[in-house]
Image (cartoon, rainbow, N blue to C red; front, side, top):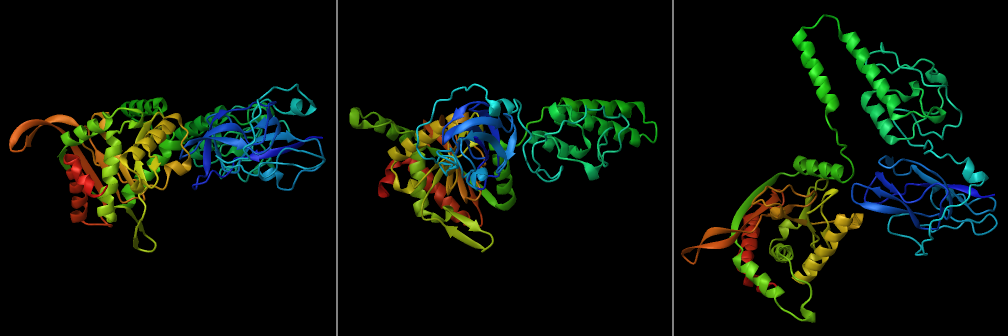
Length: 495
């Protein structure tokens, strides 16, 4: 008989604890091979495909597209092999395809980006068997831990009674929701909730899922059931608070406010947007930052770039971008002012100066703002930095960046001039110590060699952690950047 193995959401590294299901790549009944990607998930770092360590027939999927699962929650189950017992570790993500009598093979690698390298089998549909026919067509109830509903439980097997309407005279918001026909707490069974979003909604509004009877198949608690309970709570709280007849205008204001809250569009802070929000808030909370800025004449820099890119022939290589030149200038400046390529160890009360420059650059994508990192930028020339920036930018727009390509930066370059703005006060990318912001390069009146002329001018802004250096160091760093922009020949000293 085939063995049914459960594949759980693996640890994706970098301290990630949850992921959102973006797109399923397999259906129930599909045949999958070892290390075949089965689901596309979005973490706080990147969008990645998760390979399954087992080969066999998919019998069930856990979680709908758009739902969020914690690491360790079941993703799917796979029927493998035809022998007897499986390896003891199979259920935890270390087992795989049965290759003999009772022996189970697997890749042993479930982390994103790793695998056996075996060719991915083409998906095919199989005729229903006694195993696949018994598998539920809907997403089963997963064993997902939830503080509001007790410990993780197995899928609900026994059917529940039909859902009963929630009484309009429900108790106040501080008390649990009571549903007619619900069992007492002492004899309640498993909570039939599959969606983490439904659990989260219940937690936010104080709804006790153990008191609800779901209207879905086999008593499954749906979002509509929780929303009905929330409305009952609000109505009950309103009845309890009506100890006096309010003024008509007060009723009108309260009603309009309630309508406004109900019609407001809520956007969950999760995935990339949530990670950005957390990092920016932490930066403002922990780093005593200061900002200085200067206008620079970038006419000579633009002329130097044009000269670099005018060289023809097959050996010319890719064109060098302005961002690549600015990145090379940053690495030269950091070599002269290493204080700004550092971080602060709060526990040890030490400033840690870093030997390598891992240069991050801000990239705007459809999924939000991400900061890919150019590794060992101090050892690269402008052409090499430009090629790596182009590769990382393309991967960012396609959603293929790995967590390793989005972490470990020591200094960030932010070119917000592409948005048509001149200046900004950058927020430091925690735990780094500084960020250089670059505005648009535009023609402006400028005094050049004692005469008024139209020159290509750019504003440069440096935000720095005042714990790692004082204004003199920050000003010297920014002035060196401006000098290199105005006279690119200054860079020859460090090339």
